[in-house]
Length: 326
Image 1 (spheres, helix red, strand yellow):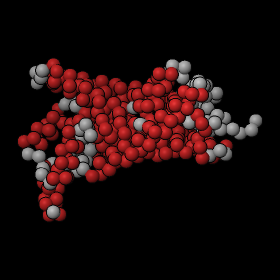
Image 2 (cartoon, helix red, strand yellow):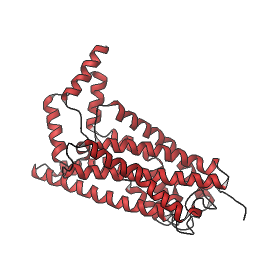
Image 3 (tube, one colour):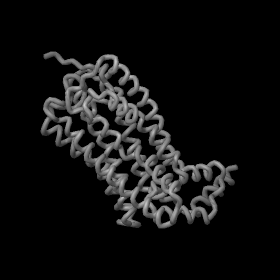
Image 4 (cartoon, one colour):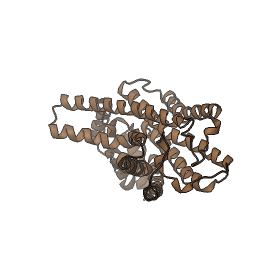
């Protein structure tokens, strides 16, 4: 049978499908265009997120995980945009499939690393041992996918590079080497998110906050954490005949990098305050800083729990440097 690759079908939807992926040509065309536009926005958002992590004075394991996740996402999406259109040869299609498998798994394993950090923070485990924590997170984020990809290549090497698309084969079940780990990671992240919301709710209840304030805190936590938990990838396991879920899956996940930048990064009051410090050279008052750090230690609010900001001294150093430059 001659080699043939249908590059026109390159939309995000097929990544999570465990059955033969067939949709009407019109819908396929729309999904491909949504994918390409989403990838463009996502790469820009991911680059901005990486820039922010490097620019503001934050030494957080959470943002260390998010930064690496954005780097993996940039690589995965650029590889995705090229894999279905640049490599018509079968051997190159297999190589690109292995690359996509690794990079997209890395996106998810780094989201798992983020959840591991949240658990370590909640239970105060390995407190003050940054090197050990970073080693654990890096092992999960970058080494974990290598093990999965290498095992898949040995067990079902011929499944790399399907006859329709440069991706894992549905026919021999090798696609589960991606779908299985993704579903497991998303389930763990969802459980951690529930735990964080529970801690947040209990803390707000002890402080006797008004119900509307408690609800607002919970919604803020959900909005800021959902983009980095990857739970929207679960929409992809719904059969392709349910077209509405395909649209949701492609729109939410193809543009994931921009959603991370908008919801997770810019919705953080701490990052906004640090940007103001960078731009204007005025550190926040000690009282506000101490209150914020106390909140970070005692709640599950993603905006505060996930970030370990350098202290007031660091902010003052930035302010002084800003004044000297001016």
